[in-house]
Length: 106
Image (cartoon, rainbow, N blue to C red; front, side):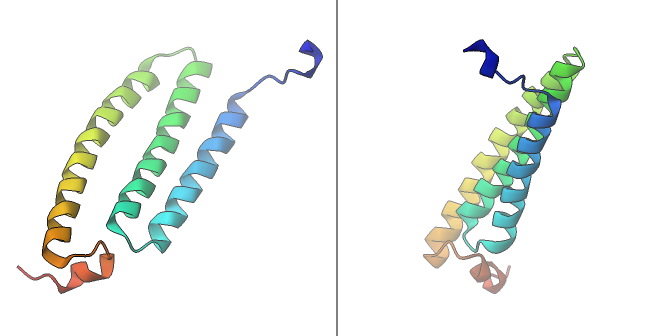
């Protein structure tokens, strides 16, 4: 059974990170919902965090993991503010469609 084990290297983590970032970027460009835009933004941020942790692990340096800790703390605050704005927008327009944002003035 141990003959079939494959070692996971840095390349595998970076390929996964590229795929996650690409999916998030495509979703960010093609979705019209504010909630989906926030989800895609978080997916891109997590892809970057994955690459930071992978580089940190393979370089035997903890600084990348510390940076990810702070980035995730800031991302949690960002999501809270983003969802609050989305809820206020939904109360006003009764829609999560991003094209409605252009119509709000002042």
